[in-house]
Every structure is written in structure tokens, then in C-alpha cells.
Length: 422
Image (cartoon, rainbow, N blue to C red; front, side):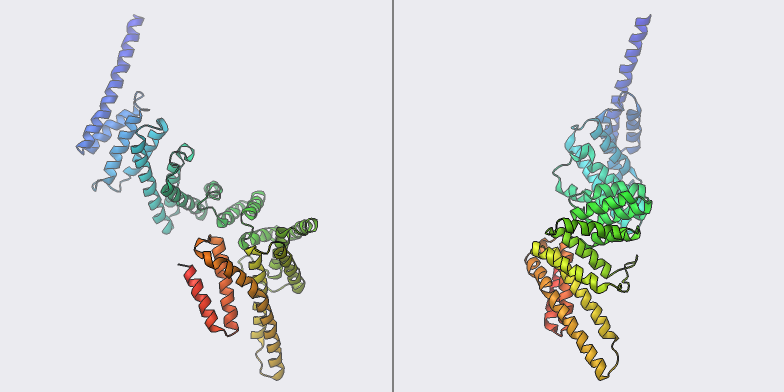
């Protein structure tokens, strides 16, 4: 009796499995006839049954059915693409090489469509939709640890863009628990990883009150983008905000004392002095010069000079040295504008200030020209940070020429700036 019962159970299992395989075929037949509802009924039975729930053939058929429905004018926009994506991903998870070309085509198409949807939602500030669709695209790209689509350059680019939308949408939606993991991943992306990602990640940790991670992120950013002024300012602002500015200066001064010939140490210390000489509030607005302004300027100039002497071809060093002189000249211009009288004494004072300003312009110009001469031949190859340096240097040169009434040269430089934006 027991043997008979076992035989009956086995026979039932075989018959059930046969029935579900038949459902897969029936779903295929219904799909060919565009009898979508029947196809859905058959395939949903198949993926729920224990004998075929892990059959990649069943899930591929389900993907094909829902993809066809999504592309049919009578069904488009009803969300069937989500079931299609779910099904394609399930096939890949169940058996990586099953109908790989067909599955990959479906997955890549789905990822690109999700990305486009994410872009539209992001542009309309629909953060939740943007995040969900971008994440779906990155999840597809990340299948099998990112190896499944290795070598697909177009997908690399789309996935990188999706990562940006995923991270930024979560951040702007104030969902930091979603934003931080996305930003941590994005910062190392070879296509979209940049200094700005670090700054947003720093802001996210600050909002959470995690000073340890905030500082660690700043320090990591400094190593990757040592010439980025925003990163340097972020570090200084961190120490100011946490009332540890003295600690920062002690660290920098100790480093310079230990290795006076180290160009990077001299440069970082000079930048710290510069930021102290030209302080800004939390909103980035310029504040009055400190009482020890002249002393800070002298120390900054000495530090930049030593850095340039040690590494004369470093464009970042020349840029900040030029900016130091240019910003001083801007302050002198403010003093000139404050001379509103018309007496002989006022005229004398104005001319003295003009001479002082022109001296500063003369000091700035060689450093700005160094940037121009170095970057002009390869301007189209510059990354975002270096293009910013190039354009900023040219903007300063144009203003200097205009102040010196060399309007033809100012106009020529402005054309160079516009050309670099194309």
C-alpha cells in the first residue's frame, strides 16, 4: 500500500510538471495570437507552481509577454514594463547563460528606458520617481557584479548617468539613508566620479551629524583632487565650523616644518592663509578682512612661491598664486571706488591706489599666462576641474586688460572663453 501511495504521488508530480510545461507552451501560443490576457493567465500559473517557478524558460516567456503588451498601443503606459524587467532579471539570476543574447537585449533596452524615465522625472523634480527608475537601471547594470555587461561602453555611460540621478534624487529628497550609499558608490565611478560628489557626500554626513565620516570624506577628496579649491575650502570650513581652525593650522605648519621642500605642504598651508585673509560666511559671501590681513597675505605669497619653486610646472600652484594677487587687486579697486572727492589730495590718493593695483596685476599676469599657454593647445581635452581653472584664469586676464584699457586684448580673451564652452 505504501509503495502504491508513493507511486501515485510520483505520478501526480510528473503530471503536474507536465501541466505547467504545457502552460508555458500555451502562453507562447496565446502570445503569437496577441491574446495577451490568456497568455498572462497561463504564464502566471507556471511561475507560481513549484515545478516551474525556477524554470528560466517560464520567466523568459513572461518577459516576452509583458514586453509585447508594453509595446502594444492598447496596453502602453500601464506599467507592464516593470513585470518584463523583473522577469528578464529573474532569468539572468536563475541561469546566467540561458538565451543570453536575447535576455541581454531585453535587459539593456529596459535599463535605457528606465534611465530616460528617470531623467524626465529628475528634470521635473519628481525625486521619488527619478530615484526608483535610476536605481532600476543601475541594478540591471550591476547584475553579476557588473560583469554581465562588461565591455558595453554605451551601457557604462548610461549606468553612470543613472547613478548620478539615483544619488542626487535621494539627496534632494532628503532621504540621506538612500543617498549616502549611492554617493559612496558614485564617487569611485570612472565616468561620473568627481570632486562635487565628495562635496555633496560631505554635506550628507554633516546633516546626519557624523563628523568622523564628514572629515574622512574631505580628506579622501583632498587626495584625489588636491588642486580643487572647493575641496580645500570645505576642509577649512569644517575646521572653522567645528571650532578647530587652530588645529588645522597647527597640522599644516607642522607638516611644512618637517618637510620644508615638500611643494604640496607649502601649497596647502598657503591656501589656508589665503582663505583666512579672504574669509566668507556660510552662504559664501565675502566678509571684512581680518586685522592681520597683511601678515596672512605675506605668508600665503611666501608659501605659494616655495611651492612653485619646488614644482614650477604645477598649474594649480600658478592658478592660486595668480588668484592671490588678483583678489588683492580687487580689494584695491574697492578702495579706489571709495575715493569720491575731486580734490588734489583725493586725486593723488586715487593714483597711488591705481599704481598699487597695477603692480598686483603685473604680479598676477605671469601666472595666469602660464595657465593660458599650457592649456590653450589642449583645451578640448581638459576635464571639468582643469577647464574651470583655464576659464577662470582667462576671465581674470580679460578683466585686467579691461582695467588697463587694453580693450582689444580683453575682447580677444573673451572670445577664447566662449570658444572653450562649446
